[in-house]
Amino acid sequence: EAGVAQSPRYKIIEKRQSVAFWCNPISGHATLYWYQQILGQGPKLLIQFQNNGVVDDSQLPKDRFSAERLKGVDSTLKIQPAKLEDSAVYLCASSPRFRRFSGNTIYFGEGSWLTVV
Amino acid sequence: AQTVTQSQPEMSVQEAETVTLSCTYDTSESNYYLFWYKQPPSRQMILVIRQEAYKQQNATENRFSVNFQKAAKSFSLKISDSQLGDTAMYFCAFMKHRGGSEKLVFGKGTKLTVNP
Image (cartoon, rainbow over all chains, first blue to last red; front, side, top):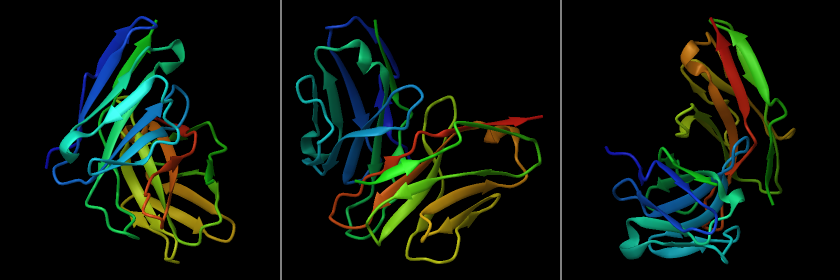
């Protein structure tokens, strides 16, 4: 079974530029997450999708970050304009078809490393 | 809101020995899941072990086991017969069990080094 795929793996941009990250979850997984992990910290949830609807985006800086999940499969996370403090690893994750009280295991991709200079 | 605390930023252990990583959490929920994830330098988060809060029996996975103390809100990870490949960051994580919003809340992590 193929895992969660992310691209690009590495990106260096100047501040105020834009960047987009792509994620392809495990086949059949209904829930998709984007996490931000700043060096030395644990991952922080940015946005959670259930199929193509947003479940939680309370910690997404909406003035500069946007995300979409068209057709309930792939997802794109965009940052525009980027700031120095956006330097982090952006982890995409997915979990199987939503079942209440299921405590589904969440599977992570290898992450997209962003450096803003 | 749930919080997860890992009080040991770094730990080291000799190969073949046993090490225990600590984790405490704060929640008002009665039903939830707890996880330990391993993150090697590649940064991919790899599930090590999970525990359902309603189960009294501690979870085990080969060399990995947990000591789950629900009343104390403590969830430690024991690694037996440590191997060089266990060197990584270890994150404790919490997932609440209701409301339809299953998401992980992570601690800050413990950097484990296994020495030859």
